[in-house]
Amino acid sequence: MRAISCIAPGDITLIEAPEPRLQPGWIMVEVRHIGICGTDYHIYSGHHPFLQYPRVLGHELSGVVADPNGSRVLAAGDPVVINPYLPCYECPACREGKTNCCEKLSVIGVHSDGGMAERIVLPEANLYKADGLSLRDAAMVEFLAIGAHAVRRTGLHPGQRVLVVGGGPIGLGVAFFAAIAGADVTILDAAADKRESAQGFGFAAFGLDEMEDAAFHAVRRTGFDAVFDATGSIRAMNASLFQVRNGGAYTLVGVITGDLVWPDAEVHRRELTIRASRNATIEDFDHVMNAIRQGRIPTDRLATHATTLDRVPQDLPRWAQAREGLIKAIITV
Image (cartoon, rainbow, N blue to C red; front, side, top):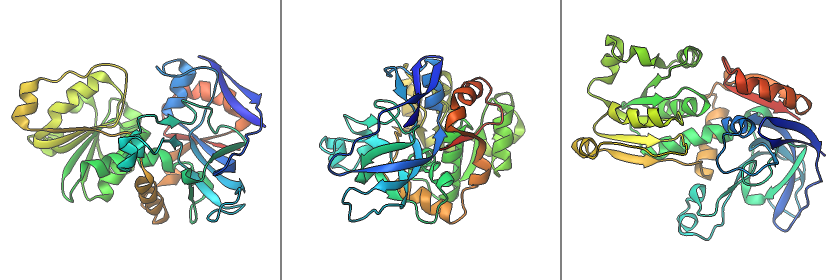
């Protein structure tokens, strides 16, 4: 079968891969759409710290069941959203239902070969019926679920003022679900095209050079009730803490190798709640799918770029270097 493999940094190609083999409790899926994630660009660029090459990319996936392998829930032809996180179900986090941060978590397309291919096999527990969704939209559920999970962990209340630092796909996901939770959302980003996108979705958006302007201070006041960092930038992560009001919440959604440095006295003076947010759980996938079905997520405007499996070796390197106007690129198989 055809698949996209990153052989080494800067070397991505269409390969003929072995057919996936079924095992008990696993189901074969014909992949229909794949979202290209920032992780895929980082793998191509050689900036992923924990990856072993070569690697078949792809973890934002939708498809249809090809072989249900005896399932009593799924049948051949059923459309599915794919959860790419493979937990152990045995560690303390898993036993608490926090499979998103399993001690032995494996993510397809990162720790093992992914779904940028014609077919894939996965445990039945990782497949969610996508009834009522287009298969293109189903491929966007995973990245949106990351934002939904961060908002759920933070426990927002209607009327709270939220700052999302970083207006990329993950930051937009946070913004959408913060707004669904009833918050008043502001986005901060250095890139003009991301600010323009955010404003087009109805959010107030500011650049770094506007943080001293009266308009920003009018929404910031003495600090935001909750701040979400979705940049993956150490500098931004360290600085965003100071946008939180006393008694407020700071949630780290982006992740990067490096050390965060905050003044202890400032954290104590404000009595901040600081939390990390990693991946998502089935509750978040369900929340996203319901929001899309209800028309609360503008998926047509999120899917800004399109390609095919055959063209990925030409298009992905180009988009890795030129991302202006790019929110989400979707591959059709």
